[in-house]
Image 1: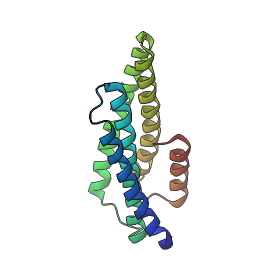
Image 2: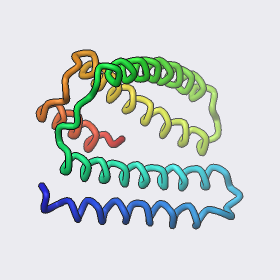
Image 3: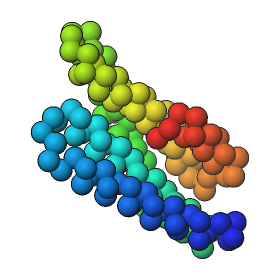
Amino acid sequence: MNDLKPEFERNAEKELENAEGLEKAVENIRNSLVKELIQSISMDSKKHASFYRAIVQHIENPLAPISEEEYEELERAIRRHIEIEEEMIKFIQEVRKRTVDKRVEFILKSILVDEHRHHELLRDLLELVIRKELVTEDEWEDLTWNIMLDGV
């Protein structure tokens, strides 16, 4: 895996450059729906860069321990976020029934897909945090497949 480290580092930089390019492209766009859609893609690119940097850190220090306090804080934060995701899912499902503008419908659907994906990922992570175990290779593989198949 060490041989891939430079490639992961390059990809992190490419993602950041791509994000900056997208942000510059919409600086003067007045259509808020288009602007926000492009900016959300830019945020995804930044997220991907962060993932690549995390992979590099993992290569450098694969067994970074998680303290008891960190587990407790993670559990609190994840539980709270799951509650918020559930509220948002209910809200969007209700609002979509009353939405007539197809552009707004498109964005709400995109948000809903993200919320469902986040909700599932957070539930899986919460289970791992509650067990207070470092994530096993098999569990990471399962989470990774979920991310790759569904996106993050």
